[in-house]
Image 1 (cartoon, rainbow, N blue to C red):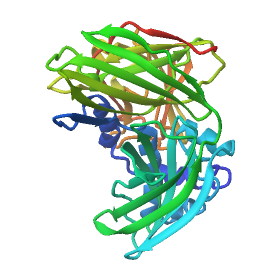
Image 2: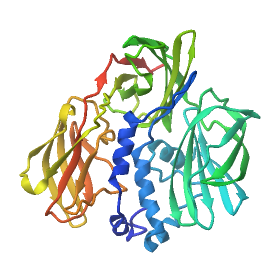
Image 3: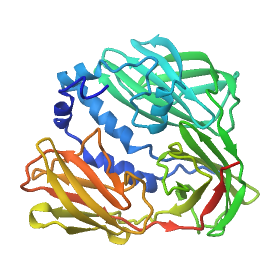
Length: 437
């Protein structure tokens, strides 16, 4: 769907009230979320991309805007489910015809669930579904999944948006704790939609859509007394899958493996965006064995090696300090202090009839992705309304550490830049992985 087809789309999006605390929370939760505590097994679910939240805020407004409902109701669902996804990997998979159509429906208690489409290539398993009822609920109970008749253990992530008040379009990302075969029969059973119980069951064959490159470096480094091993790296057209094994003594608190994250850079300096992450572990003979799995965007260019940089972000019990800079009181260029993370030098603010573009240089030696997705930079009007754009939720790298971010149009008077003073990540010795084989 393009804005040329629907000229009123942009105007309608600008009317959407966006609760910015949700976007900030998704960033904060990535490093501050408490993990469940279990005696022998631990599981942590990392936040999914904030871009998914942005899409949800856009489509969700269809329930209050008739014009948006008209636009959204024309989004194609079958055969092109992932084509317009803000998830780059799924978008590539959809546009290259790598997904498989299911179009299987089940109905119970007035709710119809349809499994529309899925993508499976060995790096990721993602399902696209729609839910239809008098008033769509959106929330699904965690499904039970059987592969060739055997129930599997997995972590999962959910995202979605309301197409209309009666129709919800969602995705389920499944990350099994064990390797799946290239082809298998799947049974998925859902026991509740929101608080409404029922039984929605789907049965269909799953086949790996294409070959992926599998590299097993099994390279280990000692990080804060823990053995950290890059076990497997899978490279596919829709994503880059990284599997890490951590071995540490029980009671050793120098490193919390569930807060360990990894930057992945190719040999052109491109940093891959993190899509999802999860971890699980167990205690055996006085040792904690933790398996971490991360999914990143696909490689942008042909590369011979990857740099994988482990890091953690210090968590303060007091939280992050919010920074507010009144634009009225500044003359460009001016500095926005982000604490240990570094400064932002605002070099220009371009006020256009339909948008405001803020240009800035990041004065920091911290490695960041092209969207500054781990860090929050907002613009509010005099009434405290966030000028966030759902279709452009992040900054955009222009060159080097020069960025721009587009916001909705607003009055010049009373504008405020909002951000935080972020702690500087603690980085450790990097892994160099040869992928030319």
